[in-house]
Image 1 (cartoon, rainbow, N blue to C red):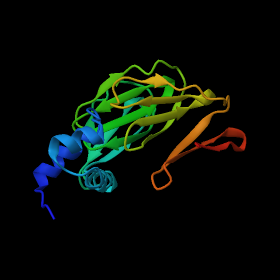
Image 2 (tube, rainbow, N blue to C red):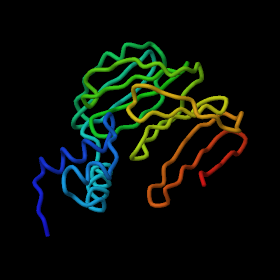
Image 3 (tube, rainbow, N blue to C red):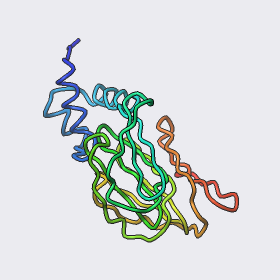
Length: 186
């Protein structure tokens, strides 16, 4: 059985995650590591707790903390109310009112405003292991592999979407919204 060092594993997993999001088969061939091993490494990396706590609030407030006790205010570059976020490795996506999306590629220290293409209130974000998904008012569903550029996914729902869950074991999405809406992906 082959043994791989931490740096080797970290580099391979980094290739699989945004912003690169390389195909697992490509990384397998390039690195000489089986697809099954890479899938396990990626799952392990995604299940690790975040390195920083991120707090969000009104007027674009973002604060980060390594220990949950001592907090540093960060400049988000926006003034909208921020509602939630998702992370993959050092990439953090934060979403909010009026279609606001800001991202950080350094674990939450520096932030860049992104164009969402919508004016909807964005309510919840999730990372599926392959892409970020965001839901919001009036059936809004956005997707991005890197967190930098976003595309709108058409849905058949007019109801406000309040939550999106990724069930990795079932490879299934669950949408939750107003008027009792609960929908799952095939």
